[in-house]
Image 1 (tube, helix red, strand yellow):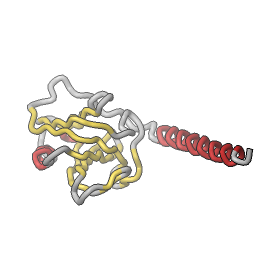
Image 2 (tube, one colour):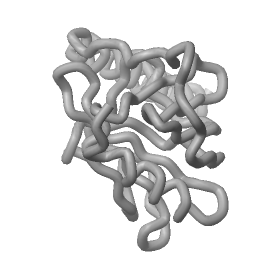
Image 3 (cartoon, helix red, strand yellow):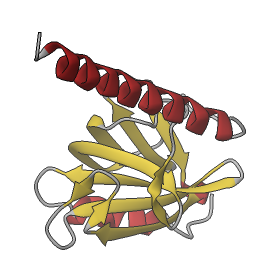
Length: 162
């Protein structure tokens, strides 16, 4: 009996914490309700310039690496296959529809060390800045192996004419 009250208190605190997380996530999705869905892969995505595999970490609001984008399947990290084509970047997140970022929507590519949920060695993340409709966002990836060819291919897309 002397353990019942502390156990009930702990369970109640855990239930309240889970409820608060759920309500917070739901509120974030509601605030981001005006975000357009990302483009799907076109019938002809163009010639492949580079491929990579790795971990999709997150998509955040540009220059705010702690403000996760929660809508349109971009809210949770997973394994991803990345393909740079002559027309843009395709990232296929495991269990979700592939996302296509047209070359004219890519604003920057860089190396990074941290973002929400992840801190790695210096330059261990790849950041791709892009326009999701009227919103500027950044997607973060942890590439398996050498990310040099991927970075070069995405950099080559920036500023290219269609």
